[in-house]
Image (cartoon, rainbow, N blue to C red; front, side, top):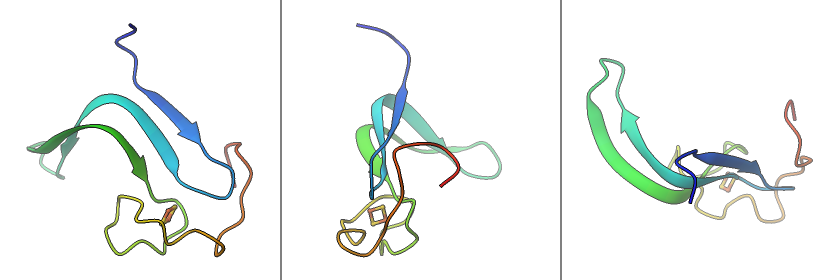
Length: 67
Ligand code: FES
């Protein structure tokens, strides 16, 4: 298995993170280590930066970058 973390843009949905990452604050302190989760890109999640499913039916974007 690769050590690379993969970010996959889901059509009309979040950015799926596959792999293990450290989430750090502005000072570089690790807040949490997490793996295999989704980041919100619609702006509607109540648990930002994570996706809570609020995008369903409320967000349109392609799977590509820049949308
Ligand atoms: S992308 Fe899922 S709540 Fe924003």
